[in-house]
Length: 271
Image 1 (cartoon, rainbow, N blue to C red):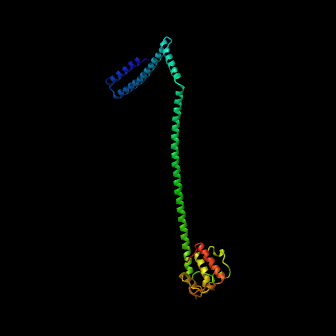
Image 2: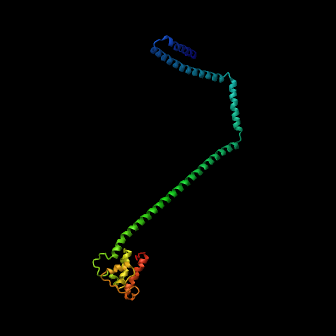
Image 3: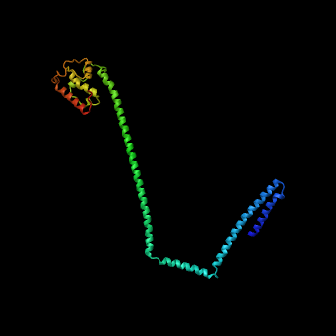
């Protein structure tokens, strides 16, 4: 069907659509006829558009055929002239110009690559610096936690030792037999490291001063004096100023010196 026939059919349907208002009295029937006609009109319009496109393409094809037909020698010669001109232009361009263009392209790519590498280097440096800062912060926090825990342990140890020392000062240590000096062996043999290890500062002070207390020496330190006053074997005779160190044997002097040096070396002096 040609475009002209389709156009005639469209005009006829459009006329029927206009006349349906007066020819059909029933509203429902009129509406159905109207919908049917509108549907046919849309279908013909699509068909008309397709036919017009087909005819246009056919016309273009015929024009191309006429241009490249054997009779049209001018068109062929024109195409040959264009081809020859393009080839001559390419061949006439110096080789060094082509090389220059190629090198320019390569240099441009290298610039882009260098720029990218520079940006990547900056990003890597920032990431490395951030990692170092994070590691430093974590190390600092870990050290603070360690010191805090150490301080808590020392405080707990001090709390644990304090009642023991107070009880000993008050004479409440429950020795099985406190009628005999606790560290009498210091007058009988040399003290050894095994005797001193694991002793508290309080015990080391008592151990060392018991040597003097067994010879009747008094003490200016109230804690020491109260402790020895509660020992049944203790008989105070000499003030610190009156006491003669020659009352001690050479073994006792040696042991007292060893214990004192041990306390100073390990910072274990209680009084």
